Image (cartoon, rainbow, N blue to C red; front, side):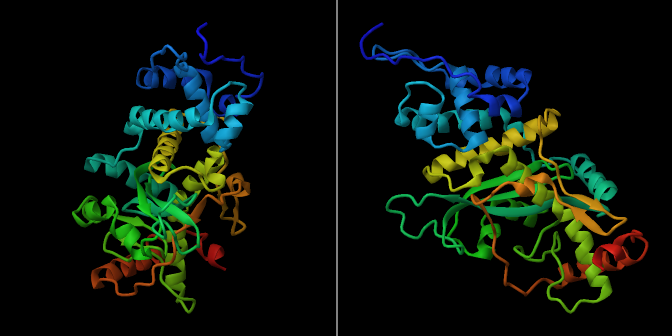
Length: 361
């Protein structure tokens, strides 16, 4: 072996256990077959290139555990420098997203939207719903010479992940990278999804559901504000919350599965983008290929007792993801208020369910 070439030491037994617990062997092999041509490097005079399989396992281990680069270089038993891991990981994450990006698709036809609508109608009793919307601040280490550019209302530095989730906890749209400093209303207004919705992305009569971080729009339903609400308004808020809980659980599953979100991610924002996108694509891939090995449980609504049984993802620390602030903008279009009132009338009329009074008592 030429002097100066990297020496590879056998990986300690069990060190990749988190990866093997999260992914079936055949799925790991499939993923490797898809990314290896994108992450393969040639040997040089000075060193052997890391094998694609090793790169993929290191990247998945990082996403699954959130361990630091320094810990990765020591724990995996390879004499790999921290700088090499820093250079390699974003590239592998980018490749993962590239080969799995088709698993995150905004519905392109009315038929696609109708499948999601049927799921929300059947499983969550919210008709004409095309998805649940939410956003999170992904906490990062403050980049050098960035000033307050990424500094958010929680006094941390972050970029924003905006997501629309279908009836089955999968991301149908993600927007990553908006800096954390942007105002509450500006986060949604500046993402591509907002423009698409304004330009009739949804079929006629369809809406999406969100919480008080978002503005009320003809295509975006949010709760009635305040505490002095009528019974009809309380029921609407409950029914909307029931449908919107899908996106809350999707983010919870994401954090529980990829512990890189448990704490601030100590890498530059452009590299964090690649990490976030890879995690979202892997999440959808695992869900849609029914390979949810040791998948976290979701919230279960016990309609007989009127209580919600929390999913086990709620036990996982999530300091690396923070909620968007409440949108203080109160001037909503008259048409949007009318649509919300129509839903409220429907939920206490022909669309009522026999347990809804128990759930708001």
